[in-house]
Image (cartoon, rainbow, N blue to C red; front, side, top):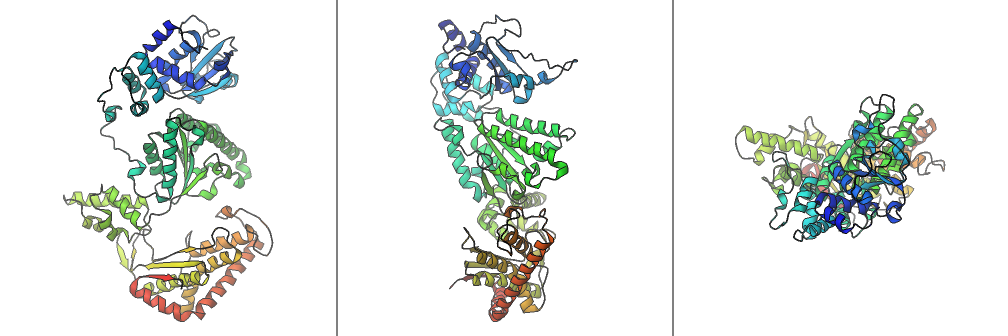
Length: 618
């Protein structure tokens, strides 16, 4: 392998920008191999983006043989190209790529790892990913071809373009006055997708995004290796909170390609057999790692499986899927410029090995947007024709609205303005809001009693300092974008809660329905009936106490706290113990509220009038 080119060969190579650029890229990628360092013989496989592969062949010929085509057979030719067609089998069932043990150095160029036959992959001494030419390569190429010097910022912008743009601008004599926005040919009719900086919301994920932006910028300037970049993240949150949009906007923010897929898409490939799924999964990862800068977005991550929950009849299938996903994720995150983003509505259903350090190690929880964020999101979808400030009149009443709900509301309002052939106004927004049904006063009174019950139990526990309560006079008909009331508070002692802290939280959860029974002598369905309700949370907490934390009758560990979900099957003995805990804490909650009934009824009456309240610990 040639470390230096002779004068004639250098002159020939320097007149061909594409060949020089790929020669630089090949040398940089192969520099650490024994074949480069000590000129050892061997078979090398280089994974090159399809648009660069033929230029890479010319460069590899220079690197190995001085550019002279003096080998006429497969056993002596130093450079070969494999394309996807090379995976086809001949009539005899033998793949049409010759595998041999070279007596010299040989390079096979392939557009992805999937294009490489298994026999050839196993025979290879090294397999190296060859990224496209970098900004430094562009600067060097322009120097040797005699073009005007280019500053690093412009070279970096050029390096992000398609191959034909990079080659053309590298060969151009002068780049003075070049309009960066015209570098890549884009479809003017295609809608422009935003960057994360342009999007409102995403409060919990902003610190991670800012950190990775700095890391990627430093990596591009060769200040840090790719291994120092935080490059694996799991997005966890309910449907409609913008997980898919986040991945797209992140790619745009970083100037990376987006490769979007889902576990469902892998499972549905061809016949859905194990081999089909593994092939589809491998292809997605190969597509991502073939770019110099890509965000691989994997939706429905929980469907990949969890070895702790495997059923015996699916163990072989699920075990192979998880094992291959772990292998591909580890490999992808090691490839410079590859970021993997997984998204799920059910973080507790994901195998722990996927979420460990070194894989999808950053865990970001996307919840419903807060009051200011709701208004900003809606204003964004209106292109800020209506400001966030004026939209608060509407969005403050949509406490359960997801970003997807707000986008849908914006589409309806813009359609309403078009129908009346007028300029979008706040009245258009109000006109398309879901119908609101006034709540009877007795229902409002019950809701207020319920919320005050929560608040008093939280305050009596000593773990809450400030409590904010809000109730509504109307309910939204037919759509879950509003609830009757809500209590906001923060509990102390969250780092290492004691048994007392956990039981106090349980009593707070049970305080709403207990207050109803104390005041009205009966209970409503407002504390149960759906996942995430008061009773659901209290029941899960009780199971964690006895089955996970060892705080029940027996000092035991049966299941991880994050595994107490719909798939958890408790023993009859465990059910009896949990029923006893819930009954005991409910009785204690009722007794405490009954003793404080006068305060309970007074505060509930005030809340009926004011519809909101703030209680501070004295």
